[in-house]
Each structure stands twice: as C-alpha cells, then as structure tokens.
Amino acid sequence: MSPAEPVGAHPDADRTADEPVDGPRGGLGLALLGSELAVLFRRVRTIALLGALALIPVLLAVAVRVTTADGGSGRGPAFLGDITQNGLFVSLTALTVAIPLFLPLTVGVVAGDTIAGEASLGTLRYLLVTPVGRVRLLLVKYVAAAAFCLAATLVVVVFGAIAGAALFPIGPVTLLSGQTIGLGDYALRLLLMALYVTLSLLGLSAIGLFASTLTSVPVGAMAATIVLSTVAQIVDALPQLDAFDPWLFTHHWLGFADLMRDPISWDSFAANALLQAGYVAVFGALALGRFTTKDVLS
Amino acid sequence: MSHDTTAVRSSRDDAGPRGAFAVETSGLTKRFGHQQAVDGVDLAVPHGSVYGFLGPNGSGKTSTIRMLLGLTSATSGEIRVLGGSMPDDLRRVLPRVGALVEGPAFYPFLSGRANLHRLDSGDRRAPAATRRARVDAALDRVGLGHAASKKAHAYSLGMKQRLGIATALLMPRDLLVLDEPSNGLDPQGTREVRGLIRSLADEGTTVLVSSHLLSEVEQMCTHIGVMSAGRLLTQGTLDDLRALGAHRVRLLTPDPDVARDVLIRLGLTPEAPARSDAAPATAGGSVRVEADLAVEGLSPESIVAALVAADVRVRGFEVAGASLEDRFVDLTGEGFDVAG
Image 1 (cartoon, each protein chain N blue to C red):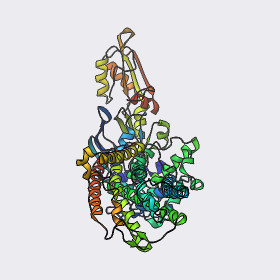
Image 2: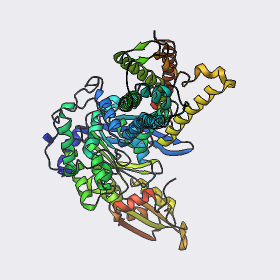
Image 3: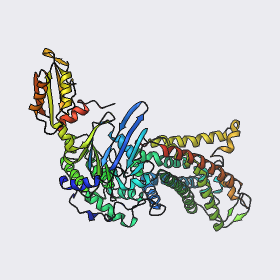
Image 4: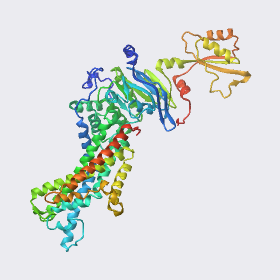
C-alpha cells in the first residue's frame, strides 16, 4: 500500500465533491449485463452443464448407430426410428429427450442460483452498495438466465445436427404432414424449434428467479425449481387432474413438433407464448416484490 | 498527521446544521423478531472526520452499517448519508460511498482484477473507458498489484481484506464505510491500513471505520462512538473522550447524598454507588461516590475544600487517571459474553 500516493492517482479525482450525481451516466448500464453473461458462461459449472447437454444428442446418435447395426428395436421416443434414415432427426429426438428432465435440471441450477448464489457468496451486498439497483439486478439476472435457456437449447440442437451428420446419411426431411423440405428450410425450422423450447423454459426461469430471492442457500432454490417442473409434468400426466393442464407451465413443452408441419401450426406456439408470459409476469412480480423489500443479511 | 488537518475539518463542520454531518441518524432502531439489534442510535459523523465506531462483537455495529447502506430497512428512525435520506436517495448517495461490509466477499472463480471489474461495471457512474486504469490503481493502492491475476479463492484472508478495501477505492468517494478493515491482517498490514485510512482522510474523505479494537481506533480516529448491546453509549472527538476518562474522582463518605449535591454544584456528574462495589456500604458505613473530573480548572483540593465546607465526612478521596481502555470497559462492560 502507498498511503503517500498523491490525490491525482485517481483518474478523475479532480471531480469536485459537489458535482451533481443524480441521473445515471452510461446509458442503460449494459456493462453489468455483459459482465453477468461473461461470469455465467465462463464459469466451469455452466460449461459443465452445457457439456452434459451436448452429450445427450451425441450419446443418442451413437446408441442408435450401434444398436441398428445389430438389427435394432422399434421402441423409443418420437423420431427415434427416423434417425437411421436421416441424421437430421437426431436434433429433434434429442430435444424430445431433453425437455422433460435434463433441460429443466440445468435451467433450475442456473435460475435458482441467480440471487441466492450472490447472497451465499456475499457478493450480493457489494453489488447492492455499488449501487446496482435491485430492480436492475433482478432484470439482468433474468436476462442472463434466459440467455442460458437459449444456449442450452442451441447446444442440444447443434450437437444433434453434428452427430447426426457424422453418423447417418442426411437428406431432405419429410415433415409430419407428409411434405418434404430441403436442408435450408429444415435448418430454419430447427431454429424455430430451439426458440420454442427456449420460450418454454422462460416460465420455469421466472419461478427459479423467485425461489432464488427467498433464500441465501442456492441449492434450496435450485431443488425447489427442479421439483416444481417435475410436479407440473406429473400433474399434466394424471388424467384425474386434467382441469389444471392448461395452466401448467409444462403443458406445451412437447408442442414444438407442430413446427414440423406444413403449413406450420402456430397454435401451440401462441398458446405457449401466452402461458409463459403469464408465468414470467406473475413470478417476475413476486420476485420483484420480494427482492426490493428484502433485508440483505448475508 | 491527523492534527495538520484539524483546522480544515472544523471549518467544514461549520457548513450548517443540515450539511454538518456526513452520516446522521436519529432514533435508528432495528428489530429482528423480538431482538433489538440496534436501539435508538443517534449517530453523528462530521464531514472529514475519521470516525471510529467501537463496540464489542454483537453490539450492533454491522447492523447499523447495513442500514446506513440501504441493505436492510430500519424498523424506525431516520438516516441521512451525505445529505440524502436513506434508503430513498440510495441511487444518488451510494455512488459517493465506498464500503466494506462484514468482511470481503468475492467470486472465488474470478481473479482479483476480474472481481473488481465486475463490481465496477455495476456502477453506472463509473466510466468504462477508465475502468482498467482505475482497477489497477485501486489494486496498487492496497498492495495487490502483483497478485491481481490470481483467482480470489487462492487469496489469503489478509489479501481478501485488501481486495475488499480496493473495491471501496474504485471511484473517488466522499465517504468510506469500513467494517472491521484490519480483520485478518498481520501487524504490518494493520499498519498499512491505518496509513491508507489516514491518507484518504487527508484527501478529504470522511471515513467511518468500525472496530472492536480500541487501540486501533485510538491510533487513527478523530472521532469515536461506542456501541454496546445495540445502543450508542457515547460519541464525540477522541480528545473529548480521553479528557472525560482522564481523571476520576473517587470519594469515600458516609454522607453520599450531600456529597453528590456538592459535586453537582461543582459541575461534576457523580455516579454512585459505584457498580463495581459488591456492597454499596463499605466498612464503617462509607459509600463510594465517583465522578469524572470533566470540569477544567477544578483542582482536587478545591473539591475537598467544598466537601468539607458542606460538612461531608470525607473518609477517602482520590483523583485517579483512567485510560481510554478503562473508559471503554466502563461503558461496555467486561467479559467475553457476546451480547445476545
């Protein structure tokens, strides 16, 4: 330390103490979002989660390749049988496999960690005295969680396409409605499906964000989020509880197959978007209400 | 060093009743359930002072600091920091405040430098163009220049403490709130922190520094406030407190009431019977009456003369010097029990 260092050592120490400081400088403060994304995606844990997701289509493709060499069986998730004819179906099958468990698992980890993770590290209090406004912090955290949803979905799709192209023949894709489309059109539809799945996960992310404002133990928020996604799917599957189905954030999770029709059936896309927006609004408001009045004691 | 700047400070203190204090609270109270963590604290930290916020562990120092910084809401009471009301003016006030609260905290997987970058990018007033230079300057200032690229989890406690202080120095601040800044530092590091705080104060920054170590506060502070069990027991300049504690009148007499009246007439504030006495009445029916010799020019012999003139039977009389430490223990009580 150098206590004798002159005042000029601070680049803008010549600023007078009375300079007005109201009104944010630096526009929207996007630097924080950039920093948040950098911290999230450079973190070993995030990379490991994305790596695990990348393994799903790869293992799937390898398994199908190996078993079909011995004759294979007819059982398995949707599109599984189509993979041998066209490797491009690997992405689709992998999404179908990943959405009920693996994607919610990773999203639960990231969304549940948003606020509780900062609280458990103690960095939350330093962000707040910086000051990062509580509303701004919550928004930045949610946007980062949403970015993770997109990245997670794209990883499954992209690695599926690579594995499929490497292990199986590829060619024009036959849609569920019977028509055949070229590679360019199919790529576009794959992107649309990735967006659909990302959208499907936004409600869950909002639930995770809210759970994360309730505790300073990130594992608790993560577990709560993941358990909720499982419970919602179980309720969705029970015929006795059909009345709840349209209100479950998991209800449209597998609806992305509708994008494999021509003309594209947008019904489930629209219904899903509305439902997810509702969840984001409700749990976003709950998270705001909780976090902006919370005593930060960690 | 601190004496050179006293004149500058006192001229600032005259800025008017509103702007006189960098931190001012009235009746500040925080309850957790039925526990009173902070109880009616009226803090007054003058501009340009180095204010030592002293108190044993669990006395409510950190709870008070959390409220000052808007991390927790006060159960009741008012807070003014740098002329703004907290937490309403938080966005206007906090950019001018650097803080170290309840120990440093970092992302263990980021380097020291990356940690500072992260926090600085959260400050909308911090220009991105100078970020690199400001981060490096802050690191150099706390002596971490050589360890800037190390991951924070590899830092020792002392290094983390330094990095925590560096976060408070990223921007020029008008007020620094440092909660136990020399925790975990070796004697050399403690000395460096003291020097750093003094140099910051010389630049005109008001520093509120909490500590449970009297010796530390004594060495670097101009003002002092003593907390115990959620209450602010006393505050003022260090010299005031030292003068208060410097001499104590101890009187042994069977006529405590008359003696007390005499002492009050002389301008003293007697406290009797002394709490430290197991039995108030000692052998022969004498009672101990004590008072701080707080009146200037009052000699011990004139006190005795006044007592005798009032027919007080003086059986014992002494004027003893008390150290600041005695004063501190007097105020906060002895023992290792953490205030619940």
